[in-house]
Length: 183
Image (cartoon, rainbow, N blue to C red):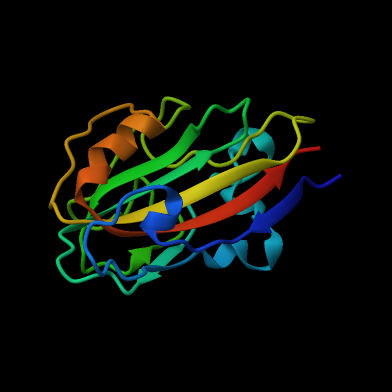
């Protein structure tokens, strides 16, 4: 039986995500992950240990607000047993970039971009691998437009520490939420 996958997409401005606006007119970043269209996360993006290819997906964005000096991205599991497990955290993406190619994690990120350790203990992308039978896991990918050129985080982080580091300089953000379940 193939793993069941459910995708729920939501694009929200940062203020709707529970944060404070970085300006009076934060705008909205457009965020797209083409591989997730149609409600299926392809096995190419699932962790190898769960039968996938563990390749970071194509991530595309546009409408980055004026004054953006860098972008930051985080992808994590919101399921209660996962405890906000970080699958991917990227900092210092250039503001003029328009996205990331499939498999770019660890190989071809834009110049200056940095990947932190994921909760598997590896630098870069670690795809979904929820425990079999643990039910639906919801994963969030959030892209932040920042008013600073770099964020002072290194190595391993938590979702809370990541958000605390970027929050003071957020101009806008967009969030995509995808559900995945291994049966």
